[in-house]
Length: 222
Image (cartoon, rainbow, N blue to C red):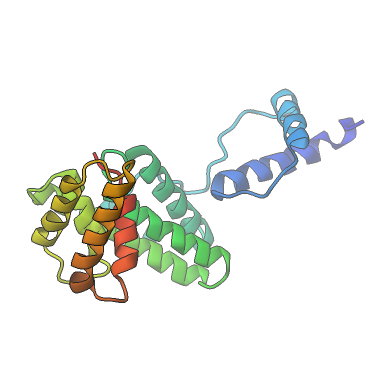
C-alpha cells in the first residue's frame, strides 16, 4: 500500500531522525507507529548518522572558534551546543561533577530558547559564553590544588558569588564530609541542608542561598 510513497516516506523519516537527534525532547510519537517506522527504515532506507551540519563532539578553544567562524545558521549552532553540553554531562559528569551546574545552565538556556523567551542570536551568544566558561573552568581545575568535589562546589558558587575563593569551597566541602550519608540518611540530610543554609546565607545572600544549596546537594560526589 505504501509502495508508491516510499521515497517521500524515506525523506520524512530522515527529517524526523535529524530533528530527534537535534532536540533532546522530541515530540511524542505513538509506540506502534514508531515500531512500523523503524521496520520500514531498516528495510527501505540507507543507514546514516543524522548529524547536524558542522557537528562538534567536544568543547575546547578550537571548537569554539570553529563554531564562531562556521557558515552554518545560528539555529544549527545553538542545537549543536545544546547537544554537546548534554553529551558532556552524561559522559563526564560522574568524574567531573563541576559539569553539573554548567549543564543545568545549558538546559535552562535551551528551555528559554524553545519557549521563545530568548532569541536565537541571544541564545547563541549565551551558549558561546557558557562554552568559554567551561573551557576556562577546565583550565582552572588543572591549576587549583583541590579535589573534584571541592572544585565542583567552587564552580557552583561562582554564578552567585563573584569573589568566590577556593577557601569558600573547601569550607562547604567540609560540611559534606561531616554528613557522609546525607544522600540516604534523612537525619543527616536535614542537618547538612541546615548547615548549608546557615553558611550560604552570609556567603551568597538571602536571595540566592536556597538555590545554591539545592544545586550543591544535587552535585555528584566522587
